[in-house]
Image (spheres, helix red, strand yellow):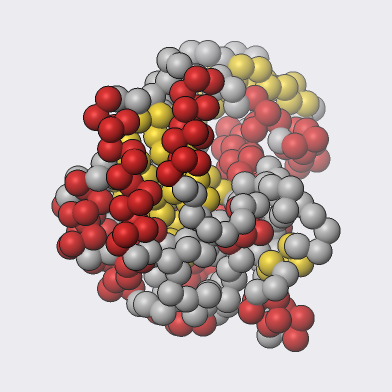
Length: 350
């Protein structure tokens, strides 16, 4: 069983730059400042009592943890050490910037129970990094990933397609460079225009044009397919909805959708459904088998996939769960014809 996350948000804390897209308070729905020792321990105890059978993993999100003054890092990590030793906490994870990781930092993290580090890479295109005001290049990404992995720390990479100067081609090139570093997982957050950011100013003056929802879904579908073929999971697409993000006037533009990840996955499943229908005549009734828990992804939001299949192929399609299918498989039944395919393979097997 995966550990239960105990999240702490430290928006902008430690950040040496204010990137053009960034407003962590609004993104996270949390205020600034670091939690006190008492706040840390109380929340951990609440989670422990609420799920006594689960192991816990403390997570520090937002900001740049390893750019905090070392006393602040110690103030957050030292109270966790007795809980780690007692097995109440299984591990610690945090997020940081690639240019805030060096050999001494990695040693400190390892000694204090940090098992996973998520790097806010955003892009691996030098010009895109420059236009976003990141303050570092691509070499820092490669060096930080290498140092963390050598120490046995799990590395995740966050990417942001749609930044200024980005194109679908450069986004996919960044993805491929990220995959070559072999992270344990990816998070992909298409760029949003948040009120109060430099990007909002550029958007208003007409110098920045964000991805539309349709464009972002199409691009992220390709990113998901390539990551899947490489065997690296994308654990999240799009920002987690919060009451702050959902407030009027906060997200000015860009592909914000509370179920963005499902839109992406559903689009890739639709591609596989289309491939399985090759040669099936119009007017046919067909049945698709879905892995456990994935029926809604195949059907699509508001049954959009089934409606598109009817329009494109003239078939009447239904979807039912097939517990015998592995999580990335799909099947088609049409009369005596049976076919199946994998989500991350583009040719169905008969």
